[in-house]
Picture (tube, rainbow, N blue to C red):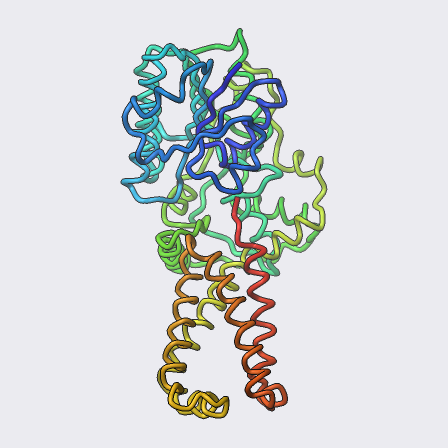
Length: 429
């Protein structure tokens, strides 16, 4: 069977694509950009489609030729209302209309738990729009509404849970609602089963785990898995959580993907619970609890590294970007005279002032490039190149700086090391 998988680089989409390939299906992966995550997919074909632009059926028709079924795993939890409306409502509505027009009858649509109840956020509201668009079509549709999905792969919320569990003292969010966490393997297996010849149609299934956990229970389950026995915790005031989410919203505007933004906070407060009875009856799948799933895969050194680094990552990038920006500003302001003496000692003569200005502006540009996700990699490589140039030039022109008691050249070495760390952990998929 040829299956078009939309959102194939996401947590659920990538797992579903891998599962379908393992069963012998041919998967055509629809991705937003042909990046490293897309190139790692076990597929023979990748199609680049920007869902915010593909809001008419004609945008989808060429991609449905020869396709037997469609699996839609596209979802944005952290985005503007306009982007959510286009991706969850208009784009998938256009896709479903194109399926009906071209005769692709089987559509499996991954929604979210609780969207038919009181909308907790723009995410739930727009997800429901997509659900209703599919229900209105003459198709053999299946709508899957998973709770919070966790698994071996860590992304978004599941990554945050591990990171919080690894802290010396666990921060607890008072307003967090209960969670019936679903396992990623169970979700991907369900998607595959809905493509079988005898699979039911025109049904809605809630995919939830067998164990209802509070936010505290969820974090401490991961904590035990990581081998930490103590239950040290502290309640985080709501105002502090709200402030952190606003900072994360700004980071999202810059292109980063922090897991705990305002939409996620509202969804977390709403809870993520449901009833697995219909799911179990329909598929025969026995959903695993979080503790049971974790017990089957003991935490490795990689898990500990990831949990430790996850919350360090934004701090490292903020420090590195701040270093370059502040260095440039200081050189143009209070550090002008000190810089002038150094440049003059290097023999620049009349070019001293222009050299300071150019160097300072380059430093600031590098820092700003690191701040923005899209340009961060280029900024990090530029930082390495400029750091190497500073060391080489100073070694040739002012070698005494190596034995200066303040260590202006020696201090570049740990900055280079931090730069290399940031390059190593830049990816988030």
